[in-house]
Length: 321
Image: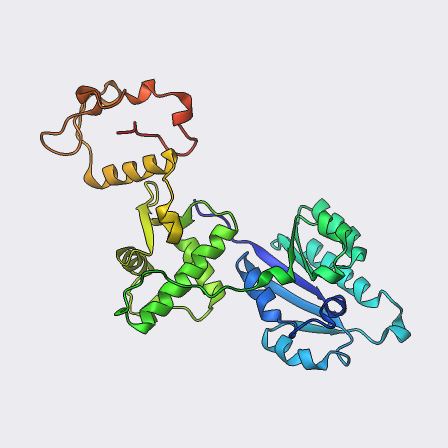
């Protein structure tokens, strides 16, 4: 069964970020932060806190990203921790009132947010921190469930290796977005890449994505074409009948684990069907007319005699051929 999609709330202490990128080359790019976060799930709240009169050059880009700008007056009028307190109040309000929000992202490196992180974790929330190395406190970094440095968000252009040059540009764009989504899911430690999970990630990365625009009637047809182009390897799930991507890119060159090999073999046998017989005794006939069972030809022992490590919790294994 596919993993449940995460729901994120994003809180940005922009003044703390300003301390980190003062004197740095280039401008702070909020798009890089958002692109990394949408890989993790659906962002339902985005708020940034600062005295925006001091950072007016950034307000246009933040507005375009649909981030709510919370105006905090100058510190001389309100005191040092005005933005921090407002951020904490809003975060706790969402934590108690919106139970469907399971992940909170605190974009700051200020150690003053450590109590907020601890309280959110106490409420069962997953907390992700994001900040710049020069302005990030070790206390905050180590208290989060996960911490990402802004400097590590350098985006490497996604390339589809060995793609036929004659592939139309409209399909090439679809394959590029597909590989980007697969890479994002692998970065989130997703082992089984369900087709629905892949499509949801592609739509978060590019909300306007629609497979029909790229020349495919269904998303499954896009995956099948990607397999024909050598971009990925598909399996059909035994329970739901939907596609699962087992490998893509350089993963296809890596050795296949025994568990994955059993899944592939079982998927193939499901497609070809199996004959009737005595079942567990090994007396049945498989693979069509004239086929021999594994127990009869001696290629491997019956499944009952396999060692315990040959079994996994989710699938009934087939003996290695």
